[in-house]
Amino acid sequence: MTREDLIAFLDREFPQIHEGGQTYFLEEIGPLSARMRMEYRDRHLRPGGTISGPSMMTLADLALYAAILAHIGPVALAVTTNLSFNFLRKPEPRALIGECRLLKLGKRLAVGEVSIFSEGRAGVVCHATGTYSIPER
Amino acid sequence: MTREDLIAFLDREFPQIHEGGQTYFLEEIGPLSARMRMEYRDRHLRPGGTISGPSMMTLADLALYAAILAHIGPVALAVTTNLSFNFLRKPEPRALIGECRLLKLGKRLAVGEVSIFSEGRAGVVCHATGTYSIPER
Amino acid sequence: MTREDLIAFLDREFPQIHEGGQTYFLEEIGPLSARMRMEYRDRHLRPGGTISGPSMMTLADLALYAAILAHIGPVALAVTTNLSFNFLRKPEPRALIGECRLLKLGKRLAVGEVSIFSEGRAGVVCHATGTYSIPER
Amino acid sequence: MTREDLIAFLDREFPQIHEGGQTYFLEEIGPLSARMRMEYRDRHLRPGGTISGPSMMTLADLALYAAILAHIGPVALAVTTNLSFNFLRKPEPRALIGECRLLKLGKRLAVGEVSIFSEGRAGVVCHATGTYSIPER
Image (cartoon, rainbow over all chains, first blue to last red; front, side, top):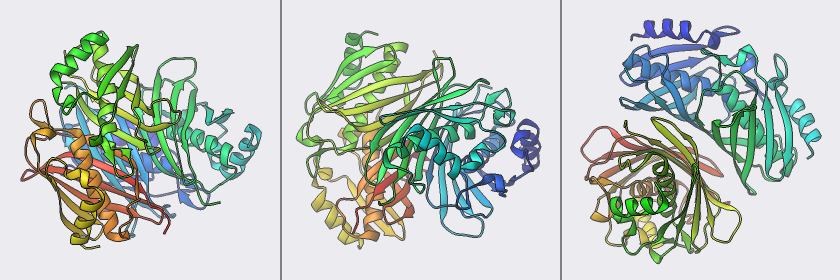
């Protein structure tokens, strides 16, 4: 699937991620990789002005999902089975970038990692790994 | 802190978790344990009518946070450093119960686990473990 | 499989775990549960007299594997896909007990957790979660 | 600490990792990174000729530990608090290379990841993340 196909697919199958105004944008798809950008709104903030954990979870999950679908096609039923997060620095109120790399794309399981950065800053704010169960085709 | 103290503290420090109407409720605090209940709204659902991963992340994080604060007092700056989730079954549209048990409550780190159930059903839908960094007192 | 069947199967398929003298013992199998005991030898110790992380990894992996095989039969090819460990206390030089509970036993994936204790002591020294891919039957 | 300092420190503090003959070698230390090589012996193999999970755990833990010590000095008491492994491919009987990258090196916690490869082959066989508690200095 191309980036345009993926965007159309995600918009159609997961309209709720745009609820309250679109903030998640698929920026790039490459070989076993994807980059997703998240703009923040007040609803994504926590006390102290940091961006919430669940917002970063959504960013990581979407980036991994997009990278997998780009290779296996629009399998809406690919299922997240594990997500693990290390929260490394408080993300200041800036857009977040999720850089995803697939480590394995097997017949039954896909595994990848996502490094989340504040836009324009070095230093990973959150690192995630995820596992997805791929339905039989 | 008693259950009433904790509820007042969470309401004051994390008002955004009640945005759109309160859905997270601290039901019980015990020795190294807590039980949190989450009612669902349309905004928590995903295609197919299941409750979203980020909603369960919030439930697990709150349950762990409440169990820790009950022992160490209102340290608003205790920081989540790791959260890991195994998604086991699709949660149907029912209230979710998070049963939290602290495994360690040290001077610098607290570690616990949360089993999330659909209310009135057996079978864990999601299992989480979390680590929190505790500031010096 | 009964406890005796499992012991015979593990001895036959994984003889290397007994190298240098048997130290891992399957003590009990129950519904979605297993208890494994590990005696220690000098080779399992680390500086300061604590039991090594890899020894606890083997204990957790064996306990989960035994609990899974007890239900699905001698599928030597069930494969560990994820293991996560929280190290909570330094295990003193005492036998270790791994109490395993399966959280899910699906057609393709099994997920469980293991709490490791020093024999005769309260307080989890290490908590593990694991995921296993089950081959088609 | 230089690579030579680190090798001398690890040899002195962790002699048991060389028991039965040295198989773990620190190949390189860089900024927030380390590369560790593991030769295998029969004792590291599992049925089917793959290299065991606990061997890879030791490789990942040593690589992370070396990368941390290179920056903070010989703090023998830095403690592993979490290790998580995704096992991606069966490692054939070849030397393993662990490429470690630190994601955070804070005052109290260090977090890093390790990609383990079979020497001379592409494709990660195991991916690990680890967290270490750093004692006050």
